[in-house]
Amino acid sequence: MKTLKEYLFEAKEQQKAIAHFNVANSDMLMAVFAAAQQVSEEAGEKIPLVIGVSEGERDAFGVTQIVDYINSLKNEHDYPIFLNADHTYSVERTCEAIDAGFDMVIYDGAKISHEENLANTKAVVEYRNKVNPECLVEAEFGFIGGGSNIKDEIPEGVSEETMTKPDEAKQFVEASGIEVLAPSVGNLHGMVKGGNPALNPERVASIWEATQTPLVLHGGSGSTDEDFVSVIHAGISLIHISTELRIAYRKGLEESFAEDKKQLAPYRFNKRALDAIQIKAAERIRLFWGLNN
Image 1 (tube, rainbow, N blue to C red):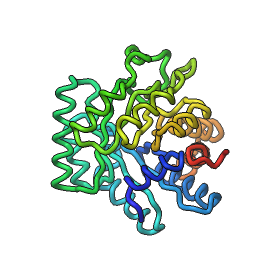
Image 2 (cartoon, one colour):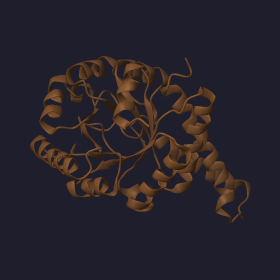
Image 3 (cartoon, rainbow, N blue to C red):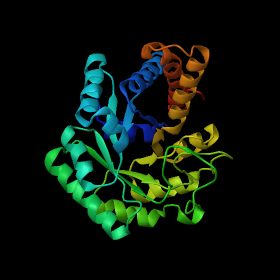
């Protein structure tokens, strides 16, 4: 099986993107995995999949437990499924995920000074080199807000002026030693009620040209299909989806209880929610992998 790094570069060459879905429990994980298997069967190939767990999601799932779960799926189904320690705000917790055997980690220093962010990211890379060399280290460079939620308006500080600058991105990649970069290119975490801002494929292309480093689109939920396709063709090779899954999950639960208020069996009242997650995840995998064209 290819490594995640190989899949990322291959996706870039083929103008495709790997779907990255955040999950908080085994039910969500299995619904997303079912979607990946479904689309892979339709396409006649095993499409790579990345599962993300933020600090809160790792606490809910269990750091070593989620690693064991992913490895069991990978081995049992011979499937290219990988695990990312999404948005981690301390060196200690990032290294915890490296120790646990994650395929990828992201140290998020977006809220601290550039100097501190660079120093901490370098510390993570150095630790990874000693403990788990196969683990990819990603960094977010540029501000895109925070929170997988519904926002009334675009967060303050997210604008064209604050988008990642290609020359600065190149300097950061070279100085830190990271293998994967998450830039600000019009994207933001969560979804805006009035519609998310447009993505900027020209900026994506410029950053790729400057860094030659796999690029990740965080905050994918809420962007238009057209915007997704444009940034994939420009150089994005991994796209994060979280808020859309949370909305589907909650709506499914609400519909289940509206239909049967007395239902107590989780495997029954969860079914509608998990079906909704599978449908949404399958839609995104098809789009990102170029199967709708």
